[in-house]
Image 1 (cartoon, rainbow, N blue to C red):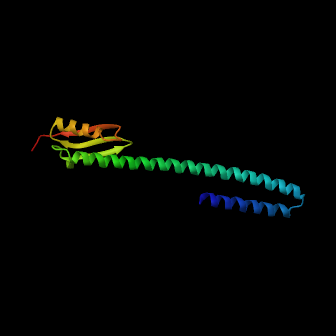
Image 2: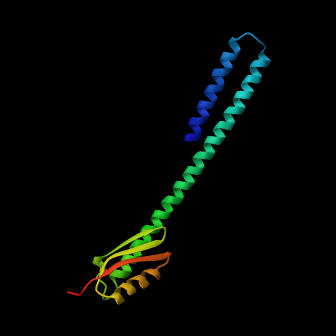
Image 3: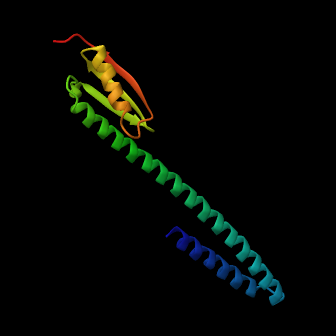
Length: 139
């Protein structure tokens, strides 16, 4: 879509310059050379613009893929913690950024804090775990 618009603009500029060159006194050869130079410059500019747009789209695609990966990891961690006896998963928050999982909230013992960390590290895609779980007395 962007390339079609750029091409249309480039062709329009060429036609406008060509028509304006024809109205001026001078040789047709001079006008032709001028049109060739403008066409060459315009083609280079369009090519550069397309390259920049492609680069930005690739970067956005990579960022989007990372967000989906992090969301999937977070869901897997929550499911794992929910199925683990002794962990009150509703009191544990999970956040994932670039594969690094942060656990926060409360647990009732150091053993459960360590268990939550270990279970999280065992999940595919987890690069590291930041354990910010606070140990509180059991009620």
